[in-house]
Image 1 (cartoon, chains in turn cyan, yellow):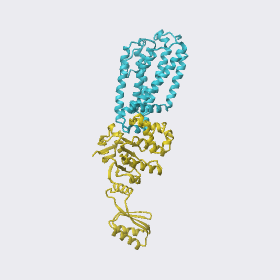
Image 2 (cartoon, rainbow over the protein chains, first blue to last red):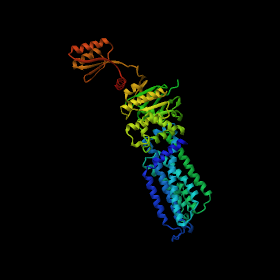
Image 3 (cartoon, each protein chain N blue to C red):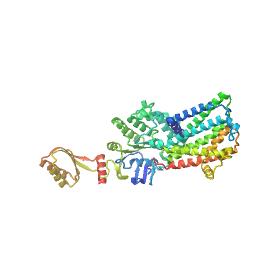
Image 4 (spheres, chains in turn red, blue):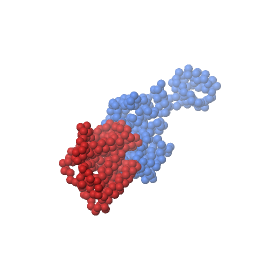
Length: 263
Length: 304
């Protein structure tokens, strides 16, 4: 465990040197500030798709999804650059020539990526809700379980980033992770919102794609809903299990591939 | 016997290139072993296989009797890579603390181990400097400091004197001998043949992935004596005359002639030949081949 934490600590420092982290953080902050301009419940739009309740909570939902999106982007970018950088710069020789298992090396790196992505997500969610408190005098405590469950998505994104970086060229690896995330998020819309299905029934091929992709989008939507409504806990079981299973399989594949990597 | 390093018919290919071809080698405990070869001979690949950074296609490698693919084999091994790739934002001390943690040293002994290592390499005053801001020589010293951390039983050094000044090279040599004195085994990949000759107990010469010569540096098989003649007036006809008489390889570099002869009598005959031909002699001496000579001869012979 000490070895893992030592590797994670060094990797965290290395990641903090990356300028892209700060660019994404500035973007997240600017979206939060823009969102602050939207006052809850004053939307004049009437809609058959969104209920009055949903419309009232729209700014919170949008903020949650934007922060989630940028946290996933951040996680994907960091995760997909960690191993190629180590392999290119040969820094890992100094680590792997020590009595360190390759899986521990990977876990240390993974921990650092997860820690930074999770930290930025939690930080910006906190900033957003502090603003909400300042404006409305109330903090929704459900943000805590919602944020907690969302960490599963970050873990999967981190592992996915590692996986794609071992198989794809350095420039394509982060795009592959984002592609899977965006597809899984976008494809979830007609499946998640019952009212939308009244006007748009997903085709058979879309349903197949939906079944094949990890349920990252569904987990995110459920977390968003959890903040202002009461989805039944059993609704979480399938998507959460799906994301955990994907994470486990991808992790085993990452370890398998990396164990066979010549340095 | 429990060898420090033991490999059995290790082979490795990179595409069509044979990096290692059936390399079998045993290095005894507490010996300094020199591994010599031209660029691309397979020296670094061999070290990588010992450290499980690369994998042999066939054959096996063991460190202290433990399969080199197992983590336990690297418990008491210090490695100095040819090029040190550091996390540049760390200070020297932070880097060594990290290395000590990787070694699994107990927290309370880390400071003392690092101090000992820094003192040994004479870089105590550099401890708070960032690695990225160090000179090439100091980086090499830091790299050596991490390799000797916790007094390993086996040191694997890839070009240890690279980037060091003459003082650094001398200190490096002393350090190797000190480590040997403390019971460590040292395996050196090097181009600096004179350094290897001074420090190593045994030497192996590798070329194109094959070990072509191995032995004690003082009685390396086929170690020969040659006659070194320095003078003037080595005309073509004289050289042809010497060649015909000796029937042995002859090398001429400027005013220096090198001849491999069988006996003192042949040497005397050559002496007369030069004097009679009007040549001038500055020196006429028997020289025992240095490691550099052997290396050059063995590699050349193999290529021819």
